[in-house]
Length: 131
Image (cartoon, rainbow, N blue to C red; front, side, top):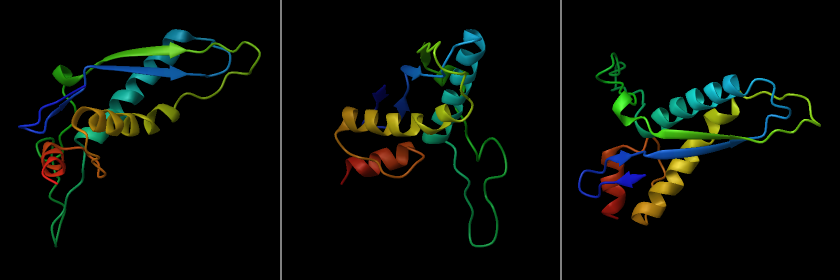
């Protein structure tokens, strides 16, 4: 990960996700699920936010509700822990929960300041650096 201290932009470069789904029946399907969920959660952690004013939603299109673009997608490595002694477990929701915390910790490692409100937008990164 890189954090530009001037602009506040966070650039994900590489993510490693380890998963223990029990017995691995279809590794390619699990990897695809984990990659997709990791990207979805990373986009929410860095960009996605519904905004409104006193009377209405102001988030109404893809300009006002940004998501990660293809050029911003990091390399994702999925590590599967095969446990043939266990039944297969679900892999749908768990990878939606961990990227935000990992990104928050990586931002702290990069700039030495905790950013406690997601999404970790450039404005919030710059504000945290000024405190």
